[in-house]
Image 1 (cartoon, rainbow, N blue to C red):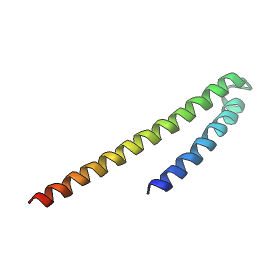
Image 2 (cartoon, rainbow, N blue to C red):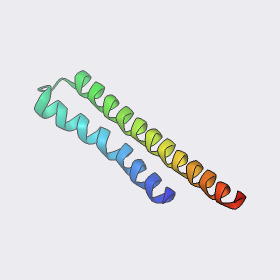
Image 3 (cartoon, rainbow, N blue to C red):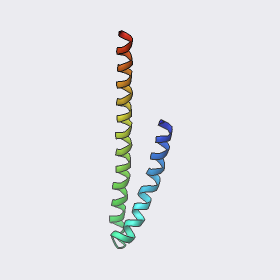
Length: 75
């Protein structure tokens, strides 16, 4: 569950920016390392935002499940 998600996002945070840097430097920006670095920064931020959104959605689902089980106990 949570540990697997953390490991996946940690690996993604290490792999995706580095890959996007070298790939964009070579194929998109024709050797411009400044623009390639900006691309890597954007990629890292996308991974971080995806992790935050994923964590918040899981937390929301857990809270809703907890409220549902509490309402069933009240009956």
